[in-house]
Image 1 (cartoon, helix red, strand yellow):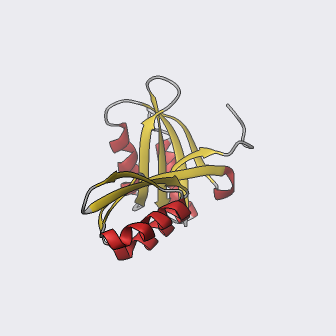
Image 2: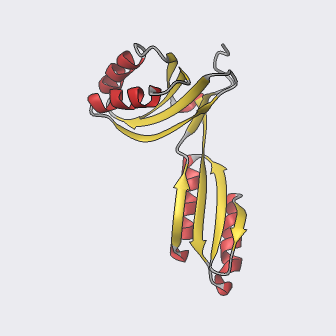
Length: 162
């Protein structure tokens, strides 16, 4: 089962390695990990998606909260989070395919951010299933390069604000 963990940490050297190694020790694969500064100076939020059973994730969480740099840790349930990921995708283009590619981009609300005679780069910030859908629709055009941010998440607006 996939778990989305939100981990507020002090932004210090080595904290990412400590957190990643905690999952490795428990034999948990990290499906995606996105980290960046937050609204408070010297703090970062890590959104970590892992796939493991409930007991294994709980054991990892027990170790994570003991790391000095970890301030707060939440295991976000799908119904209580707002999540998106960012996609940058470069596809090969031919003049005859451009209208179809632009139509697909419009359907998904993706934006064209660069074009050459041979390639086009699109971007999309959306939920994972929508990003997956765009990738699937663009595969027949030859994906040259692709980069996804992994899930970024916050607790839903109905959740306690603290």
